[in-house]
Image (cartoon, rainbow, N blue to C red):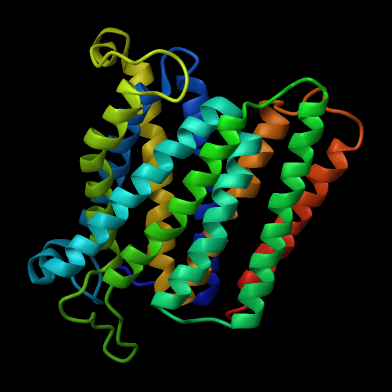
Length: 336
């Protein structure tokens, strides 16, 4: 399997993760112009697993280090396979809530609140699972992200005061999504085996990064039959979504958009997990969740979700982006 040993390369891969995680929701915005987000989400879950399998059978099965995907799968302990799978189940519930929040509140609100909270909790939980990095600097980076979340909330209040109210349900669902999303990564990180720097061998019984992402993705797709089915029967907004709509209202373009969205997110997840071998899981996850800033940029500059907001709102948004950027910079420096 391909092993990332360079810290600089790991940081660059986390940068790709940030772009992927911050951009996939644009496919949802495109698709939900024509059908409900619950229908989009079936294709999204398929895309997540397809991309994970593609990487596992290619770069996850070549090279002299570690183990190939199938060999790794055969030797893995059931407990660690289950841990990565549970990570997918937990993530999927949180992500469906985030998708619902985006549908109600928009990218510029749901991403900073939901994913920002996930970043804070995720850095803490992954550090507890595998303590790597400078604690004071990790804490300072997380503090900057928390300030950015508060600034985004203040910008939202100005928008509400201008008469463009975002339903409170959108904020509440974003918070719930963030609280859940902060836990999933630690399940995957714990399942991964350590790599011996001298022999480039992988710890027996545990999983390679590629196998861990495949099991995680399987958990996402399997749990979709529970979480997304519930969301179709009891949606947060609008009438229930008939299951038959997936077949009667869908077309090749809409299905392709959903699969593309899942593949984009899965590429980011794969790069984050692969990079964690050199950067450490806390930093890898925290830097990837700079996606919050990317998602908010899409919402503000492309989808114009704050158009018509009162004077001064732009300064709050600029300060939000600044604190996110500073926080991410500190997180990167915490491992130097």
